[in-house]
Image 1 (tube, one colour):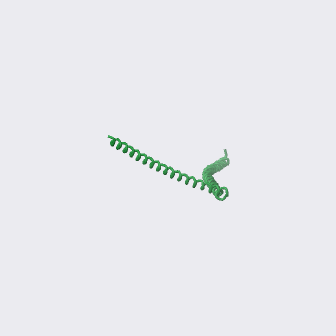
Image 2 (spheres, one colour):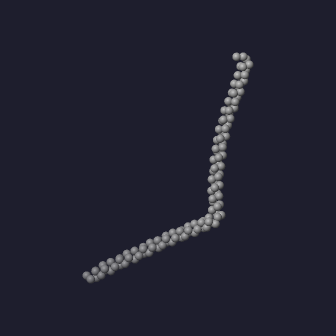
Image 3 (cartoon, one colour):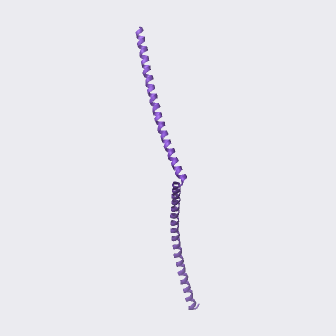
Length: 124
């Protein structure tokens, strides 16, 4: 081969080597960029889901149906609480009445057994 062809081959080899290095650097940068894009997309999805939740909350608070539903739920909760308190008070009163009844019955039984035993000793 002549010198001119060798010079041409060397120049083309150097150019291809430069393009190869540039391509590798470009691919590495694109991979890094795609990782950053994934992070940004994930953050965007989180923001979108939070925004949907906020919109649902605002919609529920501002719509007439949501206000009525909230009011009805609070009324029902208050009634349930009041009924529970009444049930507890009623159960406590019944237990107390039962205790008093049992105490009176025991007192009468003692009094009756004493009168029987004293009547038996008097007859002798």
